[in-house]
Image (tube, rainbow, N blue to C red; front, side):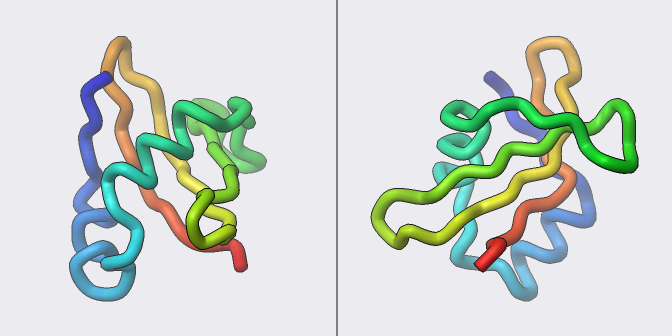
Amino acid sequence: MEIIYSKHWIKKQRDKKEDITNDKIEFAITNSKIFNDKYWTSTLNAVVRIPPSGRTLKVVYKKLDQKIFIITAYWLN
């Protein structure tokens, strides 16, 4: 699985969300149920609890053939 990051996510990760690493995003996508986004029809959501910290991570992404396009990710709690 190849992961591509949006310009929005690259800027947010650099500025505010340094603790959300690539391995946590991959973990969330592979271990979560696939949820359709409430507003965007072609966008998917992954919501999963990250084991060491117990925090819940939400990842908003799109599937493009064999690639995954990360739009954003954030902690829910």
